Image (cartoon, rainbow, N blue to C red; front, top):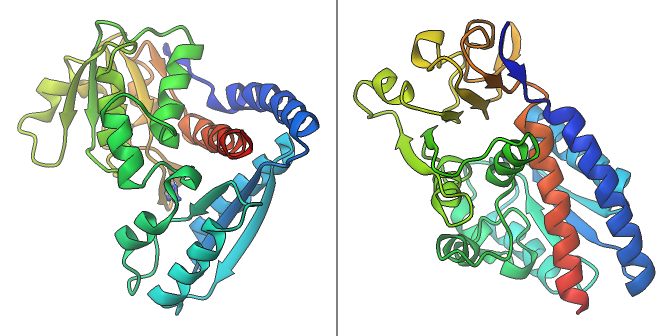
Length: 285
Ligand code: GUN
């Protein structure tokens, strides 16, 4: 291994310690406890773990979290009614609906029902639009986590060629926009399943971000020596949790690389805490 490890786990711990101080200060000044409502529908075991981890992080920094657990047969009407209730509850500052939702649920309609000022995932079209226009209220958690991981490791994106593999609404699309904006100033290329000669493109990357959801998809021959490689993927395989990057091989070529787990994931969760604190601040103004 020659690449330097981008340790998201310890960085996230450090940021949570900073956040705990900010939350304590906010609480003592406002007498308000920032509160996140987490909505978990059905019994997907992975979602269960994600929500448990998010709630544990909340506790660590002094944010209150309330879990609303609904059965796998929940109807659209029932879920929308819960969201309406949370929207109008002044004690709830952030609403997180864990994805994916069961098949009978129209996910877009649910995400659009969340009040934009409580949309701590930043999935609502209003918040996506604000992001595109460069005047966000909330930044989406995973892209923000990637940006913060680079920043706090002194990896500048200005003038760099960033290649993003994956065009999802949650990661690839918003991250590409954020990195191309003023301040980040990267030159961004987005690749996807229909990209021709993908290795020819990924080999151009100073910084390669991979969020495509396929285990060990990026191999060493696709990475320029010395490049920064950020692996957003988490895939459950017989060999356990693996990323979208063939870590063992790529870490011999890359200059920096994120591990999976312990790379981007912990920072994603930290960004949710930051959004919840900011939502509480705005509601209390
Ligand atoms: N499922 C996978 N990633 C996410 C995320 O960032 N937010 C929510 N709510 N659900 C997810």
